[in-house]
Amino acid sequence: MAVQTVASSTSGSTVDLGPAAALSCRECGHRVPLGPVFACDKCFGPLEIAYDFSAYDTEELRKKIEAGPANIWRYAPLLPVPADVADKPNLNPGWTKLVKADNLAGELGVTGGLYVKDDSGNPTHSFKDRVVAQALEAARAFGFTTLSCSSTGNLAGAVGAAAARAGFRSCVFIPHDLEQGKVVMAAIYGGDLVGIEGNYDDVNRFCSELIGDPAGEGWGFVNVNLRPYYAEGSKTLAYEVCEQLGWRLPDQIVVPIASGSQLTKVDKGLQELIKLGLVEDKPYKIFGAQAEGCSPVSTAFKAGHDVVRPQKPNTIAKSLAIGNPADGPYVLDIARRTGGAVEDVTDEQVVDAIKLLARTEGIFAETAGGVTVGVTRKLIESGALDPTKTTVVLNTGDGLKTLDAVAGTGLTATIRPTLDSFREAGLV
Ligand SMILES: Cc1ncc(COP(=O)(O)O)c(C=O)c1O
Ligand SMILES: [Zn+2]
Image (cartoon, rainbow, N blue to C red; front, side, top):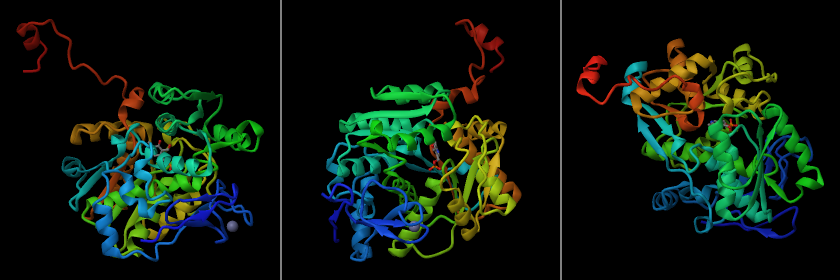
């Protein structure tokens, strides 16, 4: 398997990011050398990683993956990371459980096999550890020593933890009014955490300004100037789902949407597995999930529009509260191309779905997971999602970080420590 060493555009030094060959514009295809850049200098389109996988033999690659570590680095030959990535200080996320959710399937009437990919099992309890692990390797390659991000909560925690482990400074930015669980999780690792008076879109705008200012010089913003590398981490969700299904594509997969990056990279990951011959080439459908109070992509999908009109978010699903999603138009393309859909649910349905998943499968999801399960239920009821097909639902975060959403869930009874008192409580 060939590993390429490529010259970075900015530093002039040589960086080793494994099979990553260049950055390529998603709009016009223009290629530039690997570097901490995210927009095409010809058309301002988003840049993504272009690989050279041409030397790979399918069966050799499959064996190498299967013999790899029980984390995302088993897929290192398909990621923009050096071959010795597993030896570097990183949180080593991934290889989370794919839970066969038979009880939930029974409640929802799914007969074709229903699975929950439970990414709350990552080091900081959300899928964001996957993307940060990639960005960290890029930051190392480009010589950054401070990690930063704009975050709806989970990313801030993932950056703080990864920076602590790797010996980087971190300074991350969040809307000032996030859930306590997310704030503590982001602060506990000892980096700087800055609350901004505004919503996520204001935070993101601020970070874009900071990048161009001397104050942000030398900083690696994982989801801004390192975005092409960061985004590749979401492919590992698709790889794991297929490998855990016995190297099979699911028929249908339901993915939550904030910026839309995760959904687009789940599709890219599935496409790569098909091209590499690691899974059979057959159709699959990708469905996107949003909360009604922040549903710019589902609104555009339902209206048949190609353009996503920004919204002002107002939902308990704060991790998905991005009113102006960068990858929105690409999500629309993917949902339409694969025959999927984008749907949204109310906050009340989010809470019901969190409880449904907990009650049926013993998985306590954060509000984003409630959005995804709630949308799955709605899509089954509307007939958009076929209950006779193999379906995978992503739970991307942990319910312990969004306890307020299920406030009121608590003691069944309070009793004196006597059997009489227990009997009086009416539980037997
Ligand atoms: C728990 C959780 N799920 C899903 C997402 C969606 O991520 P993306 O911005 O890639 O659409 C986020 C983003 O913050 C998140 O925190
Ligand atoms: Zn371009």
